[in-house]
Length: 262
Image 1: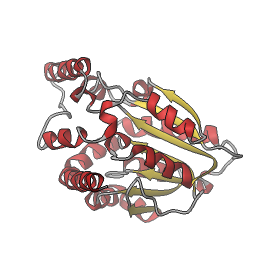
Image 2: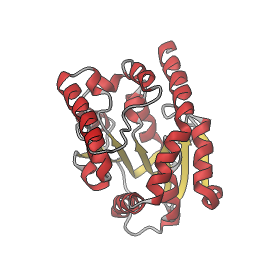
Image 3: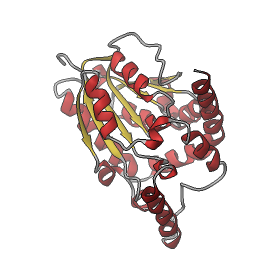
Image 4: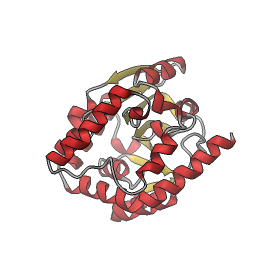
């Protein structure tokens, strides 16, 4: 427990330091075609699960909202949105980025592994690039499933981030991405100030050394969820620059539905 508390504290410190820079990335997504790419992606999955529901009646929880990109899009689409993050600095950026929409989004400081919500509170849970960073990801999935309503939908977009710390083939791919990004004149989002701090944290969280999404499928299936995975989600949702930056670490989608009637 002491180790996990230390990792949470270190994560909070790290992402506090990166809040402004990460917010700039989200602002760029909001200015470019990525806004509509992700709006379409999220809307497609949610409407497929709830075809006869008015958007305003669908309660959505975004876990690890960061500077608020998903929360903003979901609010624009008309959903009832709650967005949580461990880091107050990220939530501050999210409120600023949301602008006039901020009053319609319930932003809350919360640990993804210890949710304050009652059982069966939400129709949809979404997350992007979070689970790899958690000290107890299996416990997090249990919590997420707990707060989903029967028939509720979980969408988790993630990748095998930092697997190169453990695997020589992944390391070779990661190094090649750095070279290709430089050759193409693309800003490399895998290097920069204090990235070595996150590598140190990544060495101590469990998912860095586990190939996914097979792990996610096994854990969520054990929790009684109906699970599918899409290892080519990156091809739909990433920008051309992301496809170069992260070529060796493609984003996947974990799609899971809680047991019971919708």
